[in-house]
Amino acid sequence: MKSKLACCIILSIILAFTLSVTMDSYAADETNNGEAAHHGVDGSKLPLWSIIPFVGILLSIAILPLVFDSHFLVHHGGKMSLVWALIFAVPYLAVFKGDGFYDILHIYLLDYIPFIILLWGLFTVAGGILVRGTLRGTPVVNTLLLLLGTVIASWVGTTGASMLLIRPLIRANEYRKSKVHLIVFFIFLVSNIGGSLTPIGDPPLFLGFLRGVPFFWTTTALLPHMLLISVVLIMLFFVIDSFFFKREGGAVPDDGVKEPLRVDGLFNLVFLLGIIGAVLMSGSVEQLKVSIFGIEVAWPSITRDLIIIVMGLLSLQFTPFSGELRKTNEFSWEPIEEVAKVFAGIFITIIPALAILKAGEKGALAGLIGAMQEPFHYFWTTGILSSFLDNAPTYLTFFNTALGKLGLSEELVPTILSTPYAELTVEGHQTFVKLLTAISVGAVFMGANTYIGNAPNFMVKAIAEQSGIRMPSFFGYMLWSVVILFPLFVIVTFVFLR
Figure 1 (cartoon, rainbow, N blue to C red):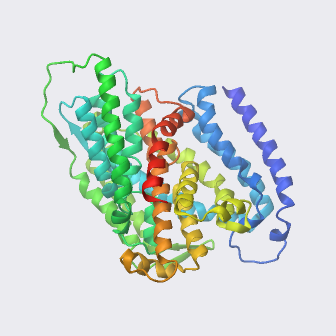
Figure 2 (tube, one colour):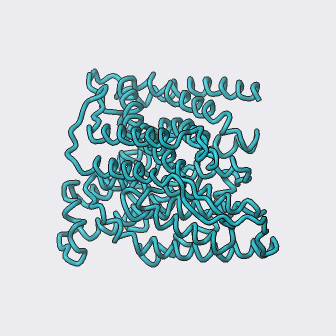
Figure 3 (cartoon, rainbow, N blue to C red):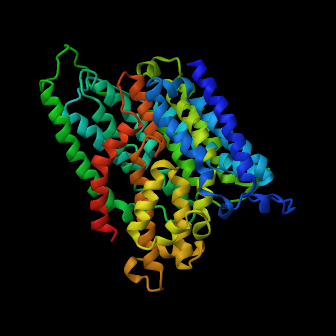
């Protein structure tokens, strides 16, 4: 194992050097302009092959667990993430210097750190709530658990709902032989599609909220799409779970224990509400900003992150990590650590991909951006990219693309979306509503396509494997999503997005 990792590191250094030399020719105009201020690298100057490190980290997540062992990312995910981060950062900084440093600092300060703090807060608080009692994983019980998670995900976040219910679902089904489908459908519904209705549900919608999308606009605009796909998925799950249940005998073993259901640690809901309140506050007050190494960071965002940290620490104070409640809940830091390490590499290597997309028709993906005209184009493009890129900046990229194509300013967004659709008479306003609906649905729904499409996916997978469930590989999971989700996305396209 050590020799193989050493070889990977050596190859990474060679590749970093090669990229640095080759990239230099593309950056001459940017690095010799003599400007003191830095605003990031112009995406129109980046070649498509600059996303090689990002593709490399994705392939590593998919392939290395198959080559070594299924727990590779648990033990070596941080090293793998660091290797690809260096492959990208060394040449990027060497060539673009201050502009490259700006990009890296920008994505960590404004995206990665708040992203991890929010996940950590929800993970910590939800881990202090324990469902006790005799809960047996019959098809009816499992379906009700998924339904409950789907309903609450928009109001406590997909991460909060996932961390709250994944362990009860796993404990209820300890006696079952076939469990993979339980986790897969849980990721589909609770970790992704259930978060469609509010900005709290999923990060892309929160970014829209920060840019003027009314809080309850997503509730009304996305509810029909969410209901259609959720109802079909829940019915399909019940059929599949019933099939496996009957194949295993169709009976629940009687161990003589019948403990009434109850929930301990409910006071953690106060801390959960504190996190939700902090998120709402950060998007509702005046965005006064402070400059950190040239990066403009909003004070409400800093306050939000501090409040989330305090809520998590209070949860640990009142439900200690070493306490009986968290031990019974099988709580550990391993899942959040794995997410933090792997996504640290994903966020930095994603920089060229996002910059190229942001460049629009001036960038290396000009053909793709130029071909996007209809709502279903935005749905599928945003969705497929959100499956592999971070869905929050992908949403924001196409949010701005839609505004630019229609010649609208961001200041008009609250007015357009607050006006009843039938009363929108200015050219382009109705079209923007259709495009933003497609972008929102694509970013949230198709985050379920891969383990990295949305952070809760990765955490749920890690918790399931920690509990002894052998989860599918990266491509194995994608087979589930392609077979089950893609036909439903086609239906959504024809029903709502033509």
